[in-house]
Image 1 (cartoon, protein in one colour):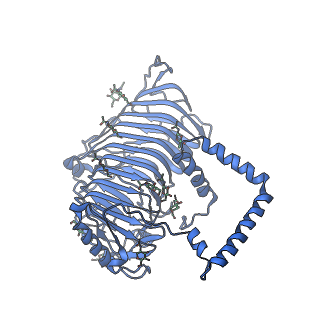
Image 2: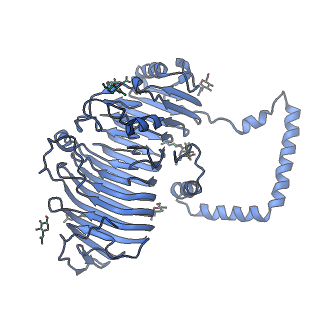
Image 3: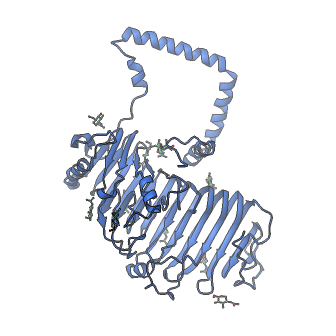
Length: 509
Ligand SMILES: *[C@@H]1O[C@H](CO)[C@@H](O)[C@H](O)[C@H]1NC(C)=O
Ligand SMILES: *[C@@H]1O[C@H](CO)[C@@H](O)[C@H](O)[C@H]1NC(C)=O
Ligand SMILES: *[C@@H]1O[C@H](CO)[C@@H](O)[C@H](O)[C@H]1NC(C)=O
Ligand SMILES: *[C@@H]1O[C@H](CO)[C@@H](O)[C@H](O)[C@H]1NC(C)=O
Ligand SMILES: *[C@@H]1O[C@H](CO)[C@@H](O)[C@H](O)[C@H]1NC(C)=O
Ligand SMILES: *[C@@H]1O[C@H](CO)[C@@H](O)[C@H](O)[C@H]1NC(C)=O
Ligand SMILES: *[C@@H]1O[C@H](CO)[C@@H](O)[C@H](O)[C@H]1NC(C)=O
Ligand SMILES: *[C@@H]1O[C@H](CO)[C@@H](O)[C@H](O)[C@H]1NC(C)=O
Ligand SMILES: *[C@@H]1O[C@H](CO)[C@@H](O)[C@H](O)[C@H]1NC(C)=O
Ligand SMILES: *[C@@H]1O[C@H](CO)[C@@H](O)[C@H](O)[C@H]1NC(C)=O
Ligand SMILES: *[C@@H]1O[C@H](CO)[C@@H](O)[C@H](O)[C@H]1NC(C)=O
């Protein structure tokens, strides 16, 4: 396993420290403050140490005088954070007989708690507090008007014996379980046809214990598609925030055909190698969704926006639309930071991706599709992306030929158009751009504006294109492919391309 429970690799800590102040605090004075404090500390070290000792001795004697036994004050200095009451009624998971020893199976307790909350809908719903501990459970369902609150140190552990995982029918827009035909395993935490659901906490964890699943998958011992960690279907007004999701058996967080979903301030972790299909977040046929302030480091795509697979997705006809993704730090060593597709047959439009750092990754942002998908990807805006040590930066791929069955329509060509990349920076990139349209699936109206990416190899043809129409505005580094028109910063045409269809794709590089 590459990722450990308390990451100690200096690089991962470095990003985290950097990220917290910069993203959550847009106030630049903050930094000046820190440096002032740092200077003060280094010049007044001895004084501060003396002060520190004085403080402790005073505390110690005061404590002894007031004492009734035990260092009371120390306990008060580090209280366990009290859980806010976010609904009119709050329950404690232990009230339903749960035992947080990591061994007892608590499915019945979760189910009883959810049933109790389901009766409170008209009164503003209910909250289920999960206290510190290891709460082993099989999959269970949520209910409407519910808040699941994970205290600091609370870990919901998914049982890793598939006997406990109920099977569900395939998703209608996929036709198949995805990895196997027929039914699929449900998700550890599941919901259907819900309204007003909150999953939040003081950075408590939902842990899917995926290792067993990944091994069985590799050994081909599973007869059904693995289950996601959290899957909410046909629901609206969903908020998931302030928690950690880790080691999902399959995709981590999968909102399916939902409306008004907010995902904020999550940490999503899985080993960066050998954790197959552990995508971070998969918005799938969702409308009005925000994903912000998250740290994602997983074994597949960080985010993958989807909308169904080939003929099943075309028939289901539900696009992913109005999606805003911002202020993220993502690492994906085997796939991409942020993907659209490859299943996009219901269409994907009006997606904005901004202020995202993608580091130590194979690809940064990718759109992937294939003949047979149908649908469209249009009105996609990428703005202020930073790449640090990624192999391929911007990718559009139109031959991602992975199909549910032979009955797909090879003439169902997706439409790819109106895609812009603005303020793209970074370093350590091998191939900054690889836009591979085809005769059947040309990529139209692509715009590059303000791009400068430090490259690892000085080589020609690292800005690669085929069947792409669009423009470059102002200076772009490295030099763009011949397929694009050149404009100056004022928007005057400098040079019109005569070779939109020429292919300059070099996979060996
Ligand atoms: C829940 O119950 C447990 C065990 O009784 C207790 O330790 C914990 O403090 C309670 N949590 C809340 C939020 O009431
Ligand atoms: C959750 O609800 C769905 C839909 O009602 C149902 O098919 C599934 O069996 C339920 N899962 C569990 C674990 O109860
Ligand atoms: C993010 O979550 C952490 C852990 O729960 C919390 O300490 C922090 O204040 C949250 N940040 C924001 C911006 O909500
Ligand atoms: C939340 O917990 C995760 C996993 O333990 C940790 O990596 C992350 O830094 C924590 N987030 C905050 C804001 O404390
Ligand atoms: C898969 O199916 C085979 C053959 O029916 C069966 O022997 C095996 O136990 C099944 N495996 C699982 C994990 O259900
Ligand atoms: C969206 O959901 C949030 C809860 O997450 C709710 O407060 C808000 O009113 C909803 N917005 C709309 C337009 O329904
Ligand atoms: C996340 O946690 C922070 C700090 O406790 C709190 O201020 C914020 O309201 C929480 N955000 C959400 C969306 O729950
Ligand atoms: C596009 O999505 C954003 C949210 O990301 C939304 O505010 C905006 O209204 C949408 N635009 C259209 C034309 O629907
Ligand atoms: C660009 O994104 C980075 C995070 O990757 C952020 O720190 C910076 O403030 C953003 N710049 C602008 C102009 O929004
Ligand atoms: C090209 O795409 C941009 C957005 O990137 C859009 O504003 C513009 O209208 C599109 N042009 C045409 C001709 O559709
Ligand atoms: C380039 O390819 C597009 C899409 O296949 C086609 O419509 C167009 O006619 C081609 N242009 C040239 C000059 O061959």
